[in-house]
Amino acid sequence: TTYFNNGTYLEKENMNVSIDDRGYYFGDGVYEVIRVYGGKLYTAEEHFTRFLQSAKKIRIDLPYSIQEFIQIAEKLASENEIQDGNVYIQVTRGVAPRMHNFPGEQIEPMITAYAIENLRPFTKLESGVAVKTVEDIRWLRCDIKSLNLLANVLAKQEAAEASCAEAVFVRDGIVTEGSSSNIFGVKDGILYTHPATNLILNGITRRVVLKSCALESIGVIEETFTLDELYKMDEVFLTSTTSEITPIISIDGREVGNGEPGRLTVRLQSVFEQTIK
Ligand code: PDD
Image 1 (cartoon, helix red, strand yellow):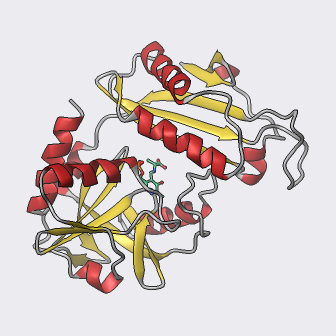
Image 2: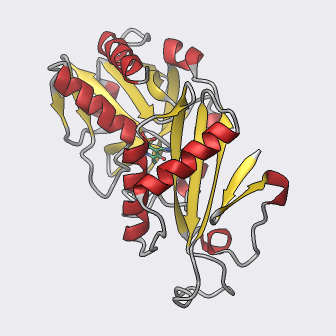
C-alpha cells in the first residue's frame, strides 16, 4: 500500500507519526474523505476546495493547489488499485515541541493521505438505519472539517451502544447534523435541512442532494427545525461521502413514517445513483 507523506510516497510500514506532531497533541489540523467509484474520484474538486477552505480558516497555508491535490488523490487510488473506496487526507500544523501557540514560520504543515477499498453500504441504503439523538456539545465552528472529533466520537459511541448507526446532534432543541453526516427531513413533499451555518459541516453530499432537488423541482427549505418536528417528519435521511443517502427509519426508538425508507428518499437515491456513473 502506497501512502502519501508530505510530497513522497511510502509503504504503510514506513509511515511514522512524530510524538511532536500537532495533530497528535492538539488535533491541530483538518481532513477530507473523498469517495472513489469505479476507480474514479467523485466530486474531488468540491472536496479539495473545502479542504483548502478548512485549512485557511485555521490559518494553515497549504503548499498545493486543488488540481495538485486531485493528482495526489488520483495517484493513490490508481497505485493502490482502488475500485470502490475512500481517499483520506489530512493536514496538521506540523511537527514542533509541544506549545499551544503556532510554531515558527519555518515549520511546514504535515500532509498525509491514503486510499483504501471500501464497498458501498448496500444493505443500509436499502433497509435504512436507526439513529439516536445526542446533545450537540461541539464548538461553534462546525463548518471546519477539524481533526478534533471528540464530541463526534463520544456521540457515535453512545449511538452504537444503543444499536444505532448514527448519532443526531441537537443544539438548544434544534437538529443540527449527524456525528459524521448531514440530516434531512421530508414533510408534505418538502425537504428540510439545517442551513449551512457555522453550526454544521456543509457536506458535499448535502450539496449534491440540494442540486438534485433543484433539477427535479423538489421544494427545499434550508431552515432549522426542532427535534419535535424531526419526530413528525414523513421521511428522514442522512447524507455523507461514505453513507451516500441513507434512509433513517427510526429515531430514539420511534418509527419514522411507516418505518420504511420513504418515497422521496428512494427517488433521491436513484438520482444520486445516476451522478456516480
Ligand atoms: N464525515 N457532517 C459531519 C460532522 C461530517 O463529519 C461529515 C462527513 C458530513 C458529511 O459531509 P460530506 O457529505 O462532505 O461527506 C457532515 C466524513 C465522511 C467522515 O468523517 O468520515
